[in-house]
Each structure stands twice: as structure tokens, then as C-alpha cells.
Amino acid sequence: MDMLRVSHVSKSFGSHVVLDDLNFAVKEHTIYGFIGQNGAGKTTTMKMILGLLKIDQGEIEVNGQKVTYGQNKTNQFIGYLPDVPEFYGYMTPMEYLKLCGEISGMSSLDIQKKASELLELVGLKETHTRIQGFSRGMKQRLGIAQALLNSPRLLICDEPTSALDPVGRKEILDILLSIKNQTTVIFSTHILSDVERICDEIALLHHGKIAMEGKLEDLKKLQRSNGFEIECYNLQDADYLANQIAGSQRLSSTKLYYPQKTKEEMTQTMLFIVNHQMTIQKIEMCEPTLENVFMEVIEK
Amino acid sequence: MKSLYAFVKKESLELIRSGKLVLLVIISCLFGIMNPFIAKITPWLMEMMSDQLAESGMSITTIKVDAITSWTQFYKNVPLLLIIFVIIMSGILTNEYQKGTLINILTKGLERWKVIIAKAMIMIGLWTICYWLCFVVTYLYNLYFWDNQIVSHMVLGASYVYLFGIWLIALILLGSTLFRTSYGVIGFVGGVFMIVYILSMVPQIQEYLPSQLLNSMSLLLSTTYPSDYLATILITLLTSIMSIGLSLVIFNKKAF
Image (cartoon, rainbow over all chains, first blue to last red; front, top):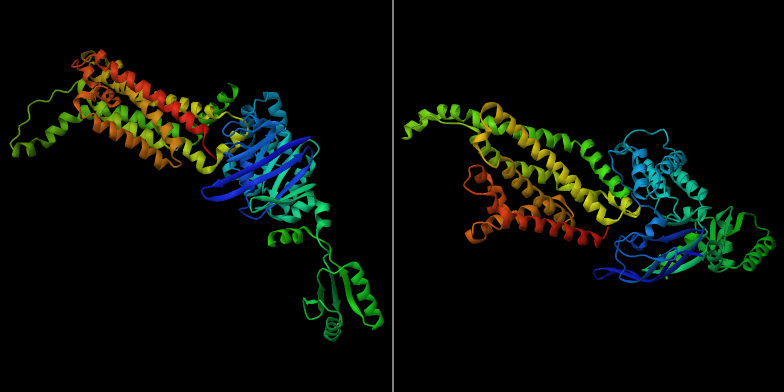
């Protein structure tokens, strides 16, 4: 079942078109990576899903219900973590979660139980100070706790890891992975290694459209072969190879790169090396990476 | 209703922990004390200045100070209390826009009208506490020094000014949905007040305008009667309700 369906959505601010006939759907219990450059329209899309921004054209459905701008009926299914979550600084984390729980209509028993569970999960259980003194990472973790409080069917995270240090990033990603069985997650980012770590499916947003969508492995397969790299021991060998086998790029004095060559071509090159009794330091096929996929789409 | 109550609770906590409540309560008490105090020192001030005044040809006879002098001060100083109140409250919504704190709350499913209504309730509650505190302090001092019996319609007259405060609160809310900064809100409330004030110079419409409520001192002196204010009360109530209604409509269509 589709947890979220975005159909033919367009949005412009003044004459600037941000989204142009955007279409995608997210199945239940997937972690959906929403990738794009800064300003590609990721946050705009998320805010429209939440009914915070007006949809110029098209329709968005959450859990089968249509999203209406300005009203938040569908928000009962959603947990939202903004890119820079802001809280009332004069409250403690527990007080803030209580407020959130009461607003979403949970019983006080549920709030108590769920809130302490979540504070434990995000490592703020022992923090009884007011939020105003919190670091960025602590706010991000409290942001996850508040987003998960009402056990949402759909969790929307807007660049949750962009501003964090490696430890903080790992913690957030681990939390997202650990809740995958209960919740569908949409996760926007421009950090591709994060996507490769946790996402099942991705969509690449470019010029207001989905430029590419699907399972991570399938997308990587789509990419043309990446060629291979040879590293020689000395300059002479490298020069000789570059002369004899055409199509190389010099990466360094001893390093050659043959872009877009197939595996068969690599085998032939290896034969040539053996026949000429050359010694090389290493030869390897380049794996397709998400970064290359990304760059290919952007450069098109 | 539970969610509305939760949001009202949050607003009260904000008033307490941000120190706004304490600040406004202290200011209101000071204003309450100031009215009889100024009345009390008026004869002394005049005496101090009598030599100077005599030089310019004015002579001072005995100055009679009573509860009326003190209540006159009350009506003179209340507009200042209103201005302070408007300035402090001007950020009640705009601060939340600027920091982005409402986004979490709205995406939790709090209906938007509850945000406006909760903030209206909090401001009306705060105004009620501050204004009547100022009134009671002045009243008690007057009772101690002089005699409150000599003025008529004391509480009713004060209620009219109180109602004017409610009108301003409705304008704060409307301004807060129209503008994104507290300067915008102050400018809006001040602007509307200026227009009404200028219009009130036209005698034919004066008695229909909310600003007429600020002249209710004359009730105490029995130069006007409660029924003279019927039109302005109706119009003030009506425009207040319209302002709040309009802010609900605009807030529903606001992008975050």
C-alpha cells in the first residue's frame, strides 16, 4: 500500500518554478531517500505534504487521505522533523514532549510512557535542563523524539544529518534504521553516503522533477560501466601503457584511468600487461557509486 | 478541547518563565501607586513653583486635592499602560513565526484556530489581571487618603477603558496574522489607533468610535451618563469580534 502519493504537483514562488509536475509514491515500511541539490525543492515538497504550504496544482494523499492546505487532518499520521527543529527554549525536553502529546490527543498515561521511552532512545533521559542551552545535535535528537511521539505511520525528516558531526550523524541514522519496522520514513538529504547506508528506495529531485527513482541497487545498475583504474610502479610503464592502449586519463604520474570501459576490455588490458611482463601495483574495476549516478543526472 | 487547554497552558508557562507576567504585574502596580501619589504631591509641587509662577503673574490659591484628582491621573496614565502592554504583547505570534516554533505544533495536528483563540484568551486574561490590579491599587489608596464616594460610576467608567484594551488585543491578533515581525504589529495597532484618533476630531462621529471609551472619566464627574456610550460599546465589541474572526481566516491561509 502507498503511504504517500504525490501526483502532478506543481509549485512556484512568484515566477520561480520550484516544482514542475512532480510525481512519486512511497510504499509502507520503506526508507525513502529524497535527494537533490540545495534549493531543488525538497523542503517545499515536504511542507506541502504537511499542509504548511499551498499546492498550486496537483494532489497529495497521505494514507489514502487528501492533504488540505491550512488544515492538518492528515498530520495525525505524520511525524515531522524539520531541518532546524525549534522548540520553546523555556521548557525541559519532558515538558515539551508532554505538550506535543496533549496536542495530538494522547492520554496522559501514554504520553508519560512513550515520552520516557523516546527520551531514552535519543539519549536525553537524564537531561532536565531547559532546551535553550541545547546544542544542535541535542535539538536534532529531541526533534526525532517529538516526531515519533504519536507513533506516526509516516516520518518525514528534512536533512536530519546535514548539520551534525560524524558521531551525531551515526546516532540519527541508527535511530532511523531501528524504527523502520513500525514506520515509513521519508528522508531528504544531499549527503549520499547516508542514503547508501539506510535507504531502500530513492528519488532524485532535479529542476523540479523526479529525474530518477527506484531501488538503490537498480539505479546503480542503470549506470554505464565505470571503467577501470591502473596504478603502475613507475612513470615509464605508465607512459608506455597510455601510448599502447588508447582512451586513458592521467590521474597522477603513475595512475591511469580508463573511463567507461567494460570488464572484457579490462581482461584484455591485463593480458597485454602479462604479455609485456610489466609489474603493476594495482588494477581495479570502478564500482558504480551513487555519487556518479547523481553527477550523471545533474550534468545531463 | 484538550489540545486547546494544552496550548493555553503552554502560553501561561511562557508568560511566567519569560518574566513577562512579573514585569507587567510590577508595572501595573507602579501605575496604580503613581496615580494617587501624583495627586498627593500636586499641592507640594505647586508650592515649590509658586515663586516662579508669581513672577509670571500667576498666584496660587489653596489647591484642593481629592479622589477626583487621583482618578483623573488614572485616566491620564492608563493609555501609557496600554502602550506598554501592546509593545510587550506584539511578539506573541510573530516571535513564533521568526523562530519557527509553531511548525512542530501545527504538524502535530493542532487546529490553527486554536492557536489564535489560545493567544486571545491569554492576552485577555493578562490584560484583566494587569488593568484591574492597577485599578484596585489606585482605589485602595484613594480610599485611604480621600473618599471614593464623591465620584459616580467608578467601576463602570473603568470597565469602558478595559473594553478599549480588549479592542487593542483584537488588533494585535489581526496585526500578527498580517505581518511577520513585531514592528509590523506595533505599526499596525498604532496606525489604526491614529486613524481612529484623527477621525474622533469630527464631532458627528466621535461618539461612535472606540476611542470614545477613553473619555469615560466624564462618567465619574457625571457630565456624561452610561447610556451615552451605548453606540461606541456596540461598535467596539463588533469590530473586536470582526478582527478576531478575520485573523482566524487569514491565519488559516498562512504559509509556514
